[in-house]
Structures are given as C-alpha cells and as structure tokens.
Image (cartoon, rainbow, N blue to C red; front, top):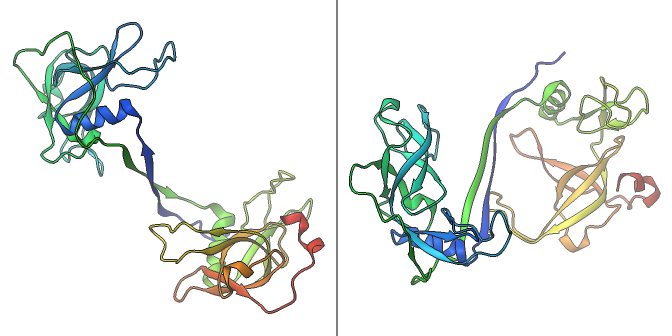
Length: 315
C-alpha cells in the first residue's frame, strides 16, 4: 500500500459586499470614532445594528449613537493569538454591552492575564490609529474606571462625509489535507506523468480521480487503471473574469475532459486554440508543467472530433 500523503492547504478568497444604509452608517461611524446602533420595534438598541428586526422582520432605520464605554457580559481567554487576530499578544474575547445599548458587541480586550478579566468589568474602546471604515477601526477594548456614558442613546442621522458603501472581507481557511489512499496513489502517479483511476468491482466504471469507493454502487475500489493521456472535451465554459491569484489572461476556457478509458470527466484548462474555437467533442492531450507534477493545460491533438454518442453519458 502506498504511503498516504498529507500537506497544508489554504482556501482563500476575497468576499466583496455592498452595504445598505444601516451597515454603511455603522462602519462609516467607526471611521469617525462614532458607534451607532439601531432601535428595534420593541425599543431595544441593537449594536452592531441590523437592517431588519430579528423578531418582527420589519425594516429598521432609527439610528442612535451609543457611548464608547461599556460592561463585559461574558468573556473567554485566548492564550495563543492566531494570524490576523486583533492582538498579537494573549487577550480576552469579550462581549461588551456599550452604555446605551441593549445588546453586546464581540471584540478583543487587551488585558495582562485572565485574572484581570471578569464579567461586569468596565471597559472602553481603544480606537485604531488609522481608520478606514471597518470593524478593525476598533483596535480593541481596554479596562476603564471612569464615568459611564449616557444610558439613553442620542438620535443620529447616520449621515457622514464620504460614506463607506462596500467592504472586501478576506475569507481564509488553513488546514492540513490528507487525500487518503486512493488520491495519494493518483497524485504520486502524476509525478510520473501518468493518470490513474480505480475500477469499481461491481459496475466496472473507472473513476478519475479515484475516490476509494464507487459513488454508484457504494463498494470499495482498489484496482488501479491507467487512463488517457488523451481525452475528449464533454462540456466547457469561457472565463472572462481574471482571478487575482492566477497568471492567466482572459478570456480562457475551462472544460470537463473525459480521458480515454475513464468513466468520469475531470476538469482542466484548454489552450493552444482560440477560445471561441473550443467545442464539445474536441480531442485534447495534456501539456505538463515544467518541473511540476500536474498538467498545466490541455491542447488539441489534431484528431477528428469525437462522436457525441461516445461521451454523452459524461456530459
């Protein structure tokens, strides 16, 4: 049995969101050192504000300003901060009900240790030196022993110069991926510029990449079968939006390709042909990355197009 592979894997993408009037006012307010909440139908001041009442579902828009001071309602100590967390030294995650608010805001509390943190302690906002209109404009909370802020929030129009109308929130997931026995064998075969799948002992279908079990019959697969290297384009799409992390000029074609001998189409980029000449049934072959263990793209072989009946079950 081949050794099972394991490697770090990062899934990352920027999530872009347009802001409505309530969220726009809240984030723009943070940029201006102003904390805004919204009054719900029952009179409760919600901080952070939401666009719709969580009970009645009515649209909300009655904005009010609350104090930058508040009370810790609950907390948890974080002894080992991770990348991109608010502080790079141990800190407490806290829920803080700001003076004048009826709900609590989650953020970090800068404290020397867990013994210095407690439910009911008074805190205030420490503003970031540079503010852009994001929750990170609150650098963190810090202990505070001064006078409390007004218990009754002040009405606010929510209007600011140069309002923030959209945000980009980077989403990232770091984990260790173990592909398992079947896919480990598949990856190792790619090092030798071979493509292998596994055949189901029941229905006899060959799956590429192999999954270790037949998704149709539900039985384990173990018999390795080398497929390709040539194949047929079964379907495709034209990509017109350039990805930030890919050095590929648009437009380009991404396709499902049924390798000869396989009963499952895999995906790959088509090059070596104008994008508007790619078609279903096009016969292609792999072009391997120099010094790498994967196919960079597929190019036309020059063979006649495959008959639709030979690949219709894989579309």
